[in-house]
Amino acid sequence: MDTPFAPTSTAAAPAPAGILHPGPASAHLAARAAARIRRSFRQIRTENVFRNALVITGLLLVVLVLGIFLTLVVQSLPSIRLLGLKFLWGKTWNPVKNVYGAFPFLVGTLLSSFLALLISIPFSMAVAVFLGEYQPNGWFSNLLKNAVELIAAVPSVIYGFWALAVLVPLVRRFETRIGVEQPLGVGVFSASLILAVMIIPYAASLGRSMIRMVPSPLKEAAYGLGATRWEVIRSVVLPYTRSGLFAGILLSLGRALGETMAVTMVIGNTSILPKNIFAPGNTMASVIANEFTEADKTVYLSALIELGLALFLVTVVINMIGKKIIDRFTNE
Amino acid sequence: MNNNHVKYRIGKSRGFQVLTIVLAFACVIPLIAILLFIIREGISRINWHFLVNIPKPVGEVGGGIANALLGSVIMIVMASVMAIPVGIMGGIYLSENKKSRLAYWCRLSVDILQGVPSIVIGIIAYFWLVRPLGSFSAFSGSVALAIMMLPIIVRSTEETLKMLPDSLKEAAFALGMPIHRVIFKVVVPVGISGILSGVMLSVARITGETAPLLFTAFGNPYLSGDPSKPMHSLPLMIFNYATSPYKDWHDLAWGASLVLLLWVLFLNIFTKLITRKWKVQL
Image (cartoon, rainbow over all chains, first blue to last red):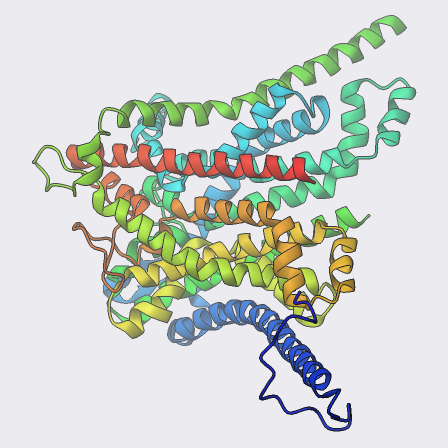
């Protein structure tokens, strides 16, 4: 802060009337006081500007999200108006004939995401329990923790490329072995496998922090009654953290539903309803990625945006529920 | 009998412990497989020539990823310039106003934004910028990336500043400092490592993003530094070349994958170091 006695260029400043009487001896003092007052006014002004800037930034973030939502709604209006609810239940998607039914993509998205979730849950829960309960510290668990975080850091396009080059041939061989009609390799199953790997970290890291929050008196009481380690985990730790673990799984699901690139690269990209889990298909995100730049008709584009809107709404709802559960859990 | 039962319970406990450890470490197997595979496929491609040349047409040996590297750097810098000030200001706003109604909605918006699928952000940038401006452009791509950075920066800034003791701020206020100086001279410098790690994390995230760039930056096989024209980026190039049927392009994509992976890895390790330092300081 400036010192009050620093020389300031106050020569031209008029002394404020009524504060000091400008006499021959106090003229200098008066000028200095005036400068100080002006400085503090300036400071208050800057302070107000800063506060307003903060509020405007906050407002901007709200407007941004509202804008995203409204843009999606407005742009998908033509399709909503033309197709109505039939859009969601229509089984054919044929842009050439102007038929738009999103049911195959709905099925593709839900099938691949829930399958991925099913595959990943044992692994992510094992990581959560191991890092939260069995061995919270030490270099060994640190290594595992960092490795799991790294899974989240690898770009999804790299997962997709690896899956295309390594996983798809393996799946194809597996499909031939078990006698699937058309062993393509690409399909819902491959997409689920790579998705399962990608979503492990989200449920694992949240689950770990939840398990760590279990109060130790609870666990000690159970140990005191003679419970084994597994019994403590099963009847104290898991029931206590149930809602938190569920929230972590929900967040994983949110990720899986919205994941685009890796899925697009291995799911096979056909707009036909997948007959079984090995058949190729399409998810809502992958059909947008594939066809958005090709959409030449207003309705076509609008139908794709309606898919985006549905995706937006579903992920928002899932994330909000997960968030609510976490908040309640951490406040208890 | 009783003794046997105890033994059974202990054995069961041991069994589940082993199962947990096995499953937990099985998660790492795909990660290691991916890393090793990409290093094996990519390492032979990477040399100086690869980094400073643009891709050659199919059938010609050689070619590099200079256009994608330059595009990635340009778009990340543009996105950072847009997102970092807004994100930090937003974080400061949320940490200063914990209870107000706007803060509630703002926090909700940030949460929503964090969960929005990246492809939806791409659609938005298309309608907000590509359409009105009339062409695919690197600028619209960087706006999409900036939107993806915002929630990470806002959240990390808010969390960091909330953890600082109130006495720090009160001491500064008691000296008569105005709020903007308290924030920029006291609060932000103390929490800078937390804010910085959020920024680094967001940069690491957008470095690998492909989906928002599909309909915005679009890709460009030539070297371009013009933000109003289409531009390539590393992940976009990997996607385009990986899904092509040509062996030469696959090789190029493997090299690009390794470069991208090293880049993202470096950013993540750097962030880790920052957070560690920050914890020591507190």
